[in-house]
Image 1 (tube, rainbow, N blue to C red):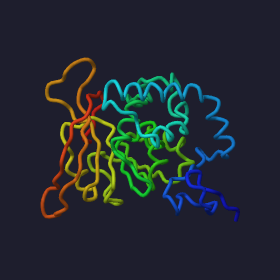
Image 2: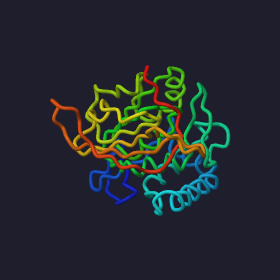
Image 3: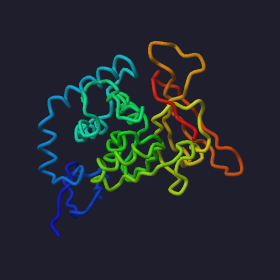
Image 4: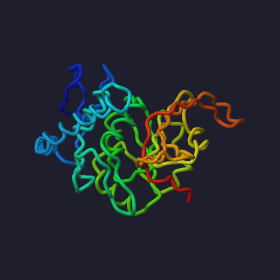
Length: 263
């Protein structure tokens, strides 16, 4: 079998390798089962729009978030994921958009910001609550080992699965987001892409010790200006299974999300 080389450190790898044994880098895979040359050409066709999107993301982060740019690994992942495959209208504008079934795809800045704050590493197993279009899962898939993503709307699962066929480290299922996906727990990271009234303890319980979850939490007294909550970063601090899981919480930026429905 032919070998290939890590683009980060030059280490020689088997053609089937997904990670670099030398530096741990996540290797590029072809999206939607396309040959690598076809994927590269597809990215080049919209390269200018993608770079404009990346510039706006960093401007937004510096001006409205933590006064720092988004991690380059996150931006590189977003450069390789063709957003127009997940949303038809104005895919590279920094704005949310409809994806059907009364749901939306998050604006690129929010995708980048949430991914950046979660600090996903190549060896991590990640749970996503709210598959939606599948775009966020696709971005995460380039940064970690495994993605398990749960969506309550059957039509969205079918829609996203057709786009995500080429991503062999993403597993999807129809289910209640509040329940998570216990069969594959514990997780290093959990990302929730719908607004919850409170921190779901069942999800915290599916985190590893010191694992992180990012989740939008509804504010009791909305501010207006289109915001209905705030992103929170949750870090699990206790693993005594006889007690409710304990955690630390850090409030982040104000956001607007569709609700996390408890079916």
